[in-house]
Every structure is written in structure tokens, then in C-alpha cells.
Image (cartoon, rainbow over all chains, first blue to last red; front, side, top):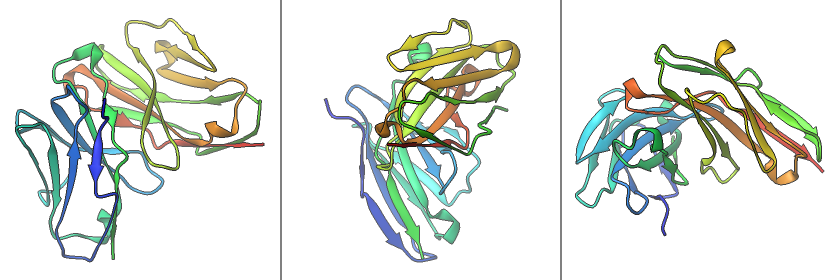
Length: 115
Length: 115
């Protein structure tokens, strides 16, 4: 049973560029959430996708956008990269509406460095 | 709004010592869930334990135990007889029903277990 997978593992970009990160959820999961974890901090919620729609959004600018595909996989796009976007980006999958059973499984993350 | 505070930034112990990690949370919701995650150097968040707001029974699972006290809004976590492999960053997290259970993390506590 494959867990959550993310690609690429590492990425180096320069300021102003655009980046796309990818996530495949755990088998049987239909919801994908994205988190940003800056160095030395806890993960911060970016947004959540279910049924190919953004269901919730954290306090992140519109430069951060996403997409979910019919197979439940998801992409995170960041435009006009800033130095402050350097972080570990974590993807988590879960089952929508599972309530008390809603456990999020995390992927290994993508380390983004903006120079 | 939800908030999780982990006052301890770093803890260093010698192998076989017990380690207790503190977590204080804030929420106005009456239905919520508390989690502890472990993040080893590889970066992936590993789920450890979950507790819901209606169950204050404290339990032990192997070398892990937790102390949930609603009266003080605390959810402390103890590793008994620590091992070098326990070295990691530990995060306390909160999810609430009114927020579709997105996770709010504390800043994390770095645990170093020395041989």
C-alpha cells in the first residue's frame, strides 16, 4: 500500500520564477492538503483540495495556487517566487468527511530553495 | 482561532531517560482533536497519537504516554526510556470540527537523545 508520495524531493529556483510541486495521495484517500514548513517552524496550512476544488485556504497570498486531478493527485503552484518561499512543502492526504477518523498522512515533502 | 504552544524549543537527554514534551492549546470549539507528530531528519511527519476532546483518559502505548487535561488545555507527551532513534522534532497539533479538521501545529520541540 503506497503512502503519500511527493515530487521532486529538492528544488532550487531563483526569485521571480514559478514552481510546481506534485503530490499523490495514499490509496483510498480523496483529499489533499498542502502545508509550508519554514526552517525551525511548524507546518502552516496552505489549502485543501477535495473533488477538484479548493475547500479551505490558510493565510497565503494568491501567488499560491493548486489543482486536484480526477485521480485525486494534486499540484501546488507558486508564482513570482520570493526568498521567503524557501521551505519544506508537505502534502497530506485524508478521507473527506471522515470526522473523528480524519487522520492525515504526510508525504516526505519537497525542499524548495529560492536564491 | 486555534493556537498551539510548545514552550520547549530543545530538550537533550541521555539514553534511557524519560522525556516529557509540553503542549498547550487554545480553541473555542468543544469538538477538537489533538495530535503528536514526530519529524525525523528525513522530513516526513510521522503520526504518533491522537486524542479527541471527549476522552480525557490518559493512556500508554509502548514507550509513549500522554496526559490530556482539558482544565489546563494541555496535552503533554512522554517518551519513556528514550533511545537514540527518538531524536527528532516533535510537533503537537490541533484540529477542530468547525475548521474541517485542518491541522494547526505548534513550533515543535527538538529532542536529542545522546548515547
